Amino acid sequence: MEYIMLFISSSLVNNFILIRFLGICPFMGVSRSINVSVSISLAIMFVMTASSSATWLVYRLVLVPLGIQFMQTVVFILIIASLVQFVEMAIEKTSPQMHVALGIYLPLIATNCAVLGIALINAQDNRGFLEMLVFTIGSAAGMGVAQVLFAGIRERVSFSDVPQAFKGMPIAFISAGILAIAFMGFAGLVK
Amino acid sequence: MLKQALKTLREGIFDNNPTLKQYLGMCPALAVSTSVANALGMGLATTAALVVGCTSVSIFKNSIPRKIRLPVYLVMISGLVTVIQLLMNAYWHGLYKMLGIFIPLIVINCIMLFRSESFALKNGVFISFVDALANGLGFTLALVLMGAIREIVGNGTLLGAPIVTTMPKTLIFLLPPGGFLVVGFLVAGYGYIYKKIGGK
Picture 1 (cartoon, chains in turn green, yellow):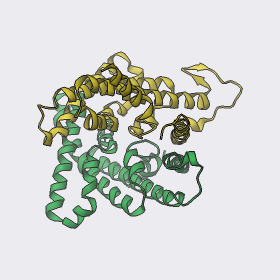
Picture 2 (picture 1 turned 180 degrees about the horizontal axis):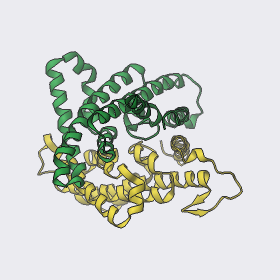
Picture 3 (picture 1 turned 90 degrees about the vertical axis):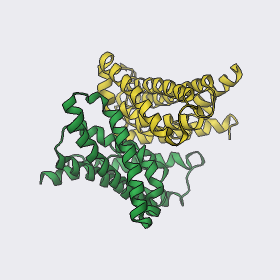
């Protein structure tokens, strides 16, 4: 039950993109069509889960015993960058089909603020391994939901008559604002 | 030299404003612009990191092999940001608490990566320094503007001093959706003014 609550709170109530403002770049830049946003969401979920498990282990087993938690940013960046490179090579070898679908997004994800952000939040919040895993998958799922919803909205907006000054990005920001208001309705669902 | 520096300065602050024109570094811009003080703190911290980071990228551009340049830069910049983070924790603890994880996230701020890849890597040390400064100031300016709007409309204050007392406070502008709405209108306004004065 506790884990279900944690999942709901991380995916909907504290949505990574719309409430915590992490990972806006792919949200604004890539989410023009629903298909693309589904594949990038899956890629992000995969990388986030792998990298937060790795950073959690290194933080707990290396940084905390040595008392050098202030080095976390440098260490996490290195882990994430090398992990993404490794994942890309592994996918290329094992499943060329998946590489075609996800490959171009992987280098982008290495420098995504959501991936480093979740590693830092996990280090800060002092969670156990299983809780951390649920929290990470929940956050990534929430990002996926927001991204797919937003892609749908943008597909509709592109056919509507928008005032000249608001064409393009301004109207995208405003529709994201309205989507964020809708997501605020989840507040209070989990204490 | 001076003319080129002035042109770079103008481009970074206005013509190619990183936030309002290129939509770079949106995450910190939306998250910390709830008050002018926070916006200013974040803007200046980012500017400091940008100036030192881009200048050192420009200095070392010939001694780092091209293939591994990205990890090298990331480590260099994250060391720098760690220093800034420790300094802020020691001297401006309140601000450090407010900005939270967005200080370490300066490392992978898109402005940082974009400026070092597209400018500092190809240009001289001095002009890279000017470019970094201009982009940092442009980012700070956009952030302070957003912070001012959100603080006045959402809380009726500016830098903590009460300004609007007759109007009810509109809380939504301090909450996350307000960030998206304000930046939407700001980008539209910037585009309108830019077109009026003859930009493309």
